[in-house]
Amino acid sequence: MNEDLVKQARRYAAKDEYYVTKRYITELCDEVERLRNINTNVFSKIQDNKEIWADAERYKWLRDSAWNVDFEAVAPIVVNCDNRMEKFEWLEGSKLDTIIDEWRKK
Image 1 (cartoon, rainbow, N blue to C red):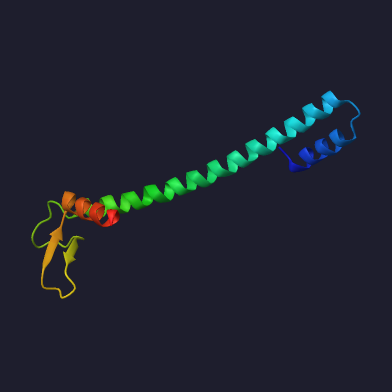
Image 2 (cartoon, one colour; image 1 turned 45 degrees about the vertical axis):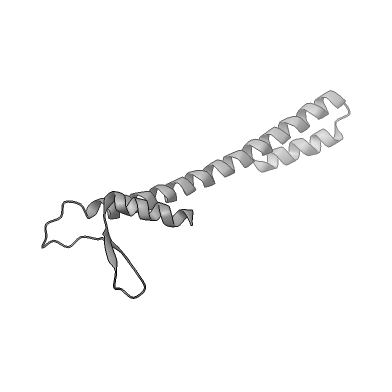
């Protein structure tokens, strides 16, 4: 609905002599603006969900691509190591899930 139409309706309601029609027009305008705000929030949430989905797909690809790879093949993998690079652990599949979950809890 055109925003100008809502403004026109509010101006008309302000000049209307009858309380009942003034109230109806004002309530309808309030409802239109409320629905407009809800729709704005819905569209932003849809966009957020697309970004979350894309992040989840990237992670899933990283986690799953390290499985069942030939020895000579190159595949992405995550390595957990200490700050001196002396102790390390290859993180694949559910191990990667567990480590990420543990760090997120901290």
